[in-house]
Length: 215
Image (cartoon, rainbow, N blue to C red; front, top):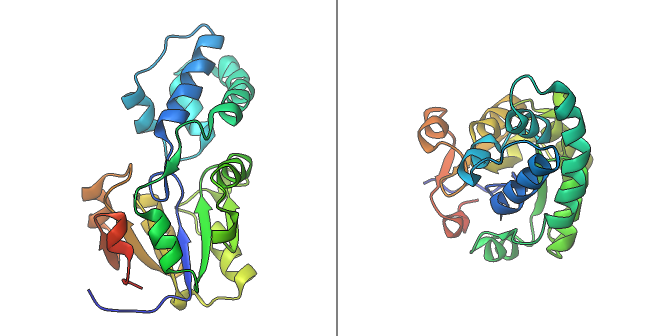
């Protein structure tokens, strides 16, 4: 793997920096229970993660549940804010990665809503690691759209060709390519490895520790 120095490391959040699946699944099932709906297996809920909370809840509530879906948004918010750092932690090895790149600019770019993202970053005492935290403000922001990446690049004054987007999903690779930044896929998260690699990211790291010394 060729060496290339990035001035800015853009990190996806869920499935890249943090393992948040259990807290999400717990909050979804608490929401479904409040609505009198059947609970879902954690594996099924895990498969809904990655495209923002609205899609997560729409899939969890199921078809024909428009009224319940609207109610679910508020109910889920209450549960998730209580549970979002019950079990959620950085993946083993991520602390070392963030410290290793201490001298570089780093940002979170996630399809998670800003409210939930801030709650988790603060709950993990991780604010000092990041120069910017960008969450989806509405559906037009969601990766693979590059809007959030563009905002961080502008805010931090970094040229696209000196930045890399690190993430576990096709959304991350496509967003990087659309924004003109390099893409680094990781193999330990929630994404489909074969689909991610088919997009030919610039870098691939199987484990968090593989991110050390790449950039």
